[in-house]
Image (cartoon, rainbow, N blue to C red; front, top):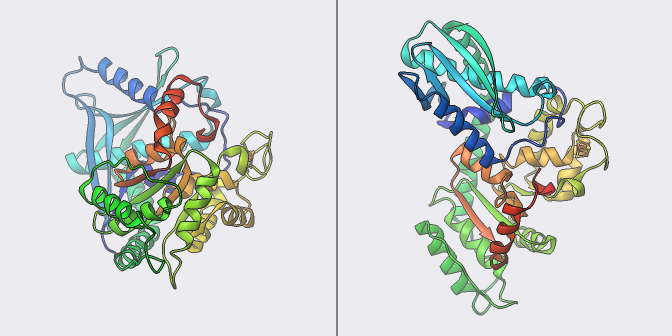
Length: 393
Ligand code: SF4
């Protein structure tokens, strides 16, 4: 296969989850709280001689490159630590979430053993309670061979998907390189706007543009950003809006690019209360049928969704219900694999923002388009001072 890079977290999310959705353990700490929690644990380790915090690690398996940062490695104790912040009793954490955490630290252990020629290593999950700053520590002594086998198994289960993703990226970028404006001509002012967006995307700069109503701002910004995507090696484009009609305009503009064999994957993200099929029900297997066995049915649903490509709200719901999984959480999963995501600004500008978190975790290069960005200052200030936004929970 052509070389494909995957973050440890993404690999484990893909391979190590099974069983039911379970959100009893939420609300989780915000991204900022998580950063502060990790910093606190690292500070407590400062006096340990030779303790390595935020240790970059990588390894390869049949052309698949797996990379990430172990939270800490105590060289003298030969112990790798994975730190997780939490809120509330750990007893409420679901089995599949715990299994995911073990999978991550096992991968780091495997990478460390391979890199340093270790025959064995201790794995530690360190849970930091955000409210009390107390640590709970779970450990497991492992041998290098068993970790190497675990690593190989996880990679093997991801390889076919990685090959598909690499091929999709190639096909997508080839199509975008020949993308033409879908109308006979630009509207007055639209070409200048498009040129400015293209230049900003090509030079990695921010652009704040003000344009009058009716010049076709949505297509005038999406088209140049898509055109810049292959040359700037953008992984994703996010078109973020303040209001639902803005999402509709973006989807209409993207639909106007429809051409034979259009390979773009377009995803519309909607708020949980708008996508939920069982309002008022808890998102857990013993309450909601679409949460029960969610991760067991997710692989088939995910495959069907990426083959469909166009995943506006109704299309996503259709795929989800055909596979008996929750449309909202299927959308959250597909945010990892879509080329263009259309959604509310909260998906980026919020302390729990899904897209921002994914971009950080996966080192994505993202082209960000924000409709009505002049409202953003107020929105971000409100988001910083208000309780969690339900739409991004
Ligand atoms: S359908 Fe509704 S209740 Fe069920 S998992 Fe999805 S969001 Fe939660």
